[in-house]
Image 1 (cartoon, helix red, strand yellow):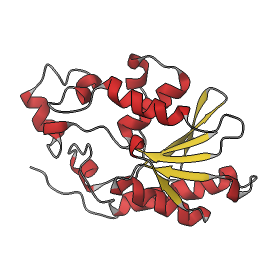
Image 2 (image 1 turned 90 degrees about the vertical axis):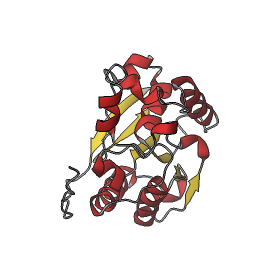
Image 3 (image 1 turned 180 degrees about the vertical axis):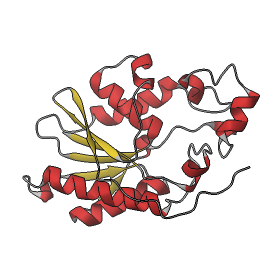
Length: 205
């Protein structure tokens, strides 16, 4: 069993700016979302011995900090694996999505634009690394993993687990207020308790 979480909201998420493998800190809302994930996971695994679970995260700061908040709630230490990192979007990292969409309307017509960035990773490259990570894990039903990753990397990890086509993978949602259970070949979504964003929205005009 794997419980898969996306990191909480970051400053770049809030600004609709592409992160890729750049660093961006969690917002107050992002920290609250991480806390809500920790509370939900506590409820979901309460019947198991906490010591039987591991937390593995991307080493990028937003995932590391989210995993740290979850780990503190569950009294578990966090391990890291580079293969769970978000894809790099090359020359587009740090750019506003709206600006790129205006510059490249033909590319941004569908969700495959994530893999079209100059110098960025391809779908196959990201799928290979997340699939390699998955293949190394203890087999079900002994598997007890909480994973903290990213939007695109998390999509592809779910796709690798469930044997989805690329088109199906790109239709998967990437919530920061819910998590997924990967078990018995199924993908089950669990919503977290709602949290309030107390930070004012920046004027990006």
